[in-house]
Image 1 (cartoon, rainbow, N blue to C red):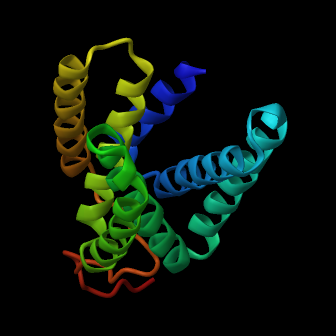
Image 2: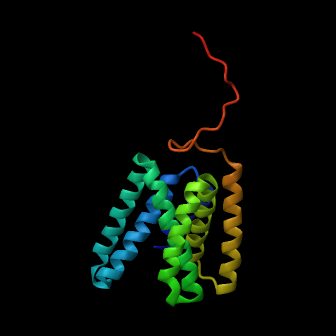
Image 3: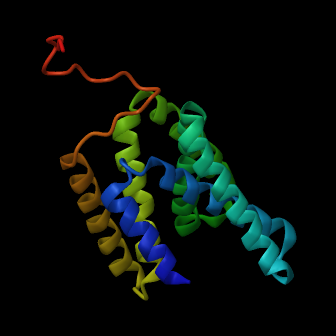
Length: 180
């Protein structure tokens, strides 16, 4: 189902900062799917997919109702995913330790630079989802991934900044009180 990856990737590239819940849902789905696939194996494809969907739904609900928890989850899972995927490309035996390092880095970055981290993380993951679905060689994949990542960051940075409940609101231009 590569078209699902392309659709999710394009949504994350263009609106990852505005659709925070989608990023957390996709990360939850990917985490649950990968975990279930490793633990249950190929004979249980429907069960593996179901576990992924449940984790995705839990991630989306956490993003909508428990924003601080979702921010931590997005940092942990996003950092682990990005660092793990990079390690798989370079040195597969380092994927788990790099995923752990990535989870810690992702958590720290997400809480210190939430808005910027969200733009970068959603662009990195969105670009990866799109490139993963395309039949490209290693060099072409790298260049397309880089171009998509940069384009996604530019699109999101230029767009309107969303308001998060757990982040301080920016100062408003009009501080006058309205009277009826």
